[in-house]
Amino acid sequence: MKKIRNGTLDFCRFIFSLLVVLLHFNITNAGNYFLNILGNSLCRLAVPFFIFISGFYFFSQTTDDNRYSEFHKILYKLTNLFINWLILYIPYTIILYMTHKDKIFELPLNFIFIFQRGCPFLPGSGFLFALVMALFVVLIINSVIHNKMICFIIYLSIYLFVCLSVYSFVIMRFIGKIPINLMAIPVIACAFYIAEKKEKISKFLTNINRLFMLLLGLSLSCIEYSICVNFKIMKINKPLLLVFTLICVVLIFLSVYNIRIIFFDKYSKEFHDLSVFIYFSHFYFVVFFRKLFLVHYIPGVAIITFLSFIFVLLLRRFQSGEIVLDLLIRGKKNIISATLERFSKYQKEY
Image 1 (cartoon, rainbow, N blue to C red):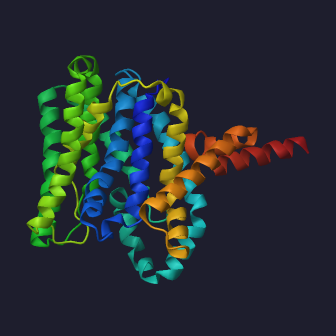
Image 2: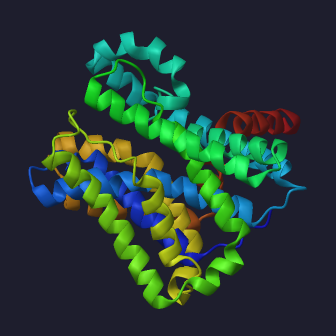
Image 3: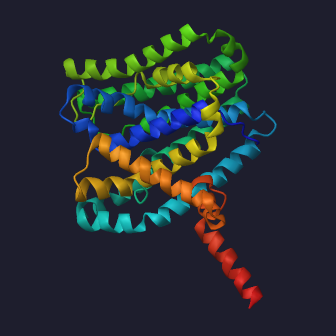
């Protein structure tokens, strides 16, 4: 699958990766009403937006004949990224479980719900599991069930089930695991339908319509949180944005889709590499700056962005740096296989 990048979408993904960093800098507990709205609404759209863009790229650049083979390639890439970052987070994991020994007792439960929470040894891995699971489910449903209306009903049912499960848990204190990651399935399904109808949709996307959808998407993401706070519907510390998530992500995506900006297109790969690196590496940065230097919110994001930019830029300047980029960002190899390959080559030479 030859991926034709859209610079605007990659720039949006970069912006949302910064919002993820803001979220993990505890902006949700900022004490400021407007920062709380930002943290509990817009920042929580980041991961669904990543999933949506990945699904859109996948379905818009594949056909029914090659989708399973391309899915295997994506699975290979994501597995490599998972292994590489898992190895790099070994020191982080050791320190985490040494300083929070109570978390050790949660490990069996975390592995049981690995598709829900991600791997307990790799922060942020829930995104990878959700993406793989959702792509696989949508591929199976679309290939087995040829009636589009039945497919639509299935996706809608999953969406309603997740929303009702979350709010029944919050309102009634129902004890159980909230299947939030199942929301990735209707998100990927929407990406599939938009990819299928992208030419017709493009004709509808005038500048006025784009602006309206952007404002509506951003507004809805804030309205739900405000409703939850003002009417005390959400009785937990961190309100969960779910009911409007799918609508907001689709509206924001459509507002920027097919907008071609020369600067964004020129540096599309750089924005992509930065967003991937920031997403996976920022947990180290957040702990380092927040705990040691008490840096919060905007300054922390600015520092992490600058350091990530310098790191990726330096890697691009050297041939050996391209190997690191292949491991940490492009997922072309994993550290274990690359090490074994190098060791085998060394043995043959000597």
